Structure formats: C-alpha cells, structure tokens
Length: 324
Image (cartoon, rainbow, N blue to C red; front, side, top):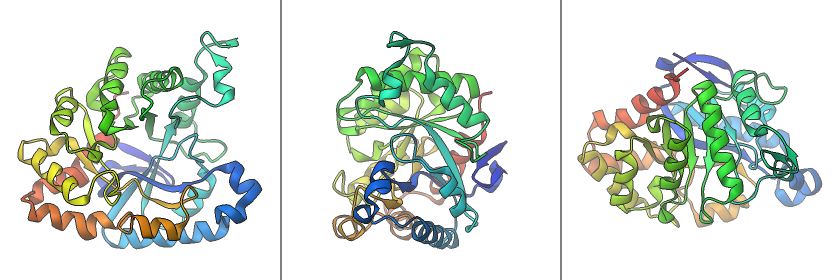
C-alpha cells in the first residue's frame, strides 16, 4: 500500500528505516510572528538548516521520518514541504491536536454541548487533513495524534482523543500518541479508543520508553498496541542505558514485532535555545539512534532480525496498512 508523504504517495516497501516519532519544526506562531528575535527564528535559515540536517540523516541509511507536529505545536506544512523538496528523506505528516489540558478557544466554544452546539469540528478537521490536505499545501497527513500527559484525561483531552478515534474510523489512518509513561496514561488512551471501537493494533502508544516499568508496558502490549520507544537521547526522562535494557528485555520476551524506535527530536524547537538544549541533552538528535543506540542494542543481545522489525517492518506495517 502507498503512504502519503510531503512529496506525494510512496510505496510502503520504499519507506526503509523509519523514525516513527520526530519533528521538523516546533514553534509558537505568535512568538515567531511578534518576537522572532527572541525565538531565534529565521524562516529561510531554519528551512536550509533542517534540509541539510535531514539529508545528512538520509545518508546514514534512514529512509523516512514521521513528523508528529500537529495543531498546538506550530505545524507549518508549507515550510516542511520546502524542506522535503531538498532531501531524499521521506517525511510523513500527522494531524491531531496537542493539548495537555484545554482545547484552543475556537474549539472550546464549538462542539457537542458547547456554546455553539454542533458536531465535533475536530473530526472534520482531521479527516480533511488526511483526505484533502493540510491547509492550502495539498499535502495529505497519514497519521493521527492524540495526547494524554501528567494532567490525565481532562474534558478537552478526552474530546481530542475521541475525535482522533472517529477520524480513524472514517479514514483508517493509524493513531500514534503522546503519553506520560510514569503516570501510565497510555492505559487511559487505550480505554477511550477501545470505547470508540478502535482496534488497538492500529495504535502506537508513544513515549513508552520513558519508563522501565515493564509490567505497565506489558499491559499495553497485551492489549494489542505497539509501543513507541521514541525518546532516545532525552536522559532526563530515562537514561539511555535503561531505555536500551527495557527494549532488549521486551525483545527477549518476544515483543519485537510491537516496538518502534525514535527520538522525538526536532530540527528547530523554540521551546529550547539550541545551545541550552545541546548542553542539557547532547544526544538528543536524529542520528543518535543509528550511531549509538543500535550498537548498544546489539551488545545487549537484540538480534539483527529484531532490529529490522523495529526499524523497518513494524513502521511499514503501521503506515502502509490502513483499515479503510
């Protein structure tokens, strides 16, 4: 099956090594519009830098990057399209809403039971992104994203998760999530998505690598979902050695066919000054996985076949096998 990317549809067999949870640009549009000097944002320079960075990543053997930037993180499809035109790397887009608690005011005022009582607008927004294109870019998203974090399932968060589920039902697009692993919020996601009729085998529970609570991870796996072990290099959540040990243990138990690997890194993220981020998390970049983590996994006993499953086969199965 074909997978939509920023340069159009590509055959699933051509995705290659795939980083399933990354970002190109994470920006606050109001900040860069009004105070770009403070946000260290030069649009043309950011595009050139991102293109060079991702082309260098492609030269290491990575074939595809899934950009999980959605509403609330400053998704700018026209700029990412400019980046994609300058690299052989396939970039897959996501749709959804990133919210830890409340929805944007426009959405809070509209929807079932809201001031303007109407059908859930987020469903139509997400479906359009997947079937027509994002904004005026003509680029179609291929993945749905929802979020539960330390605040748990607030009313706004629940609306967003259920809207993602309904957009999935309408399109068959896979779902990939953001969770707070230490608070076990992936279980909340599975519960709500299952209530909406989602087959949990079509769901990647993201940021699961932030914990070494294997019992929690097994509960998610045994319910059918994939796990995103996708923050390699962010040692403040969990050190790399412990992340590697968890992946190796899950592979030893036979779950390699349910794991995907990534970094959750960005080419530009205005939440962090570049120099500060380099100092605080020097390994948090798009090349860390292949350069350092894969050799550590091999040393921990993970077989070449299991590495291929996590880096190539599982992403292809998730992205290239829609249910519609």
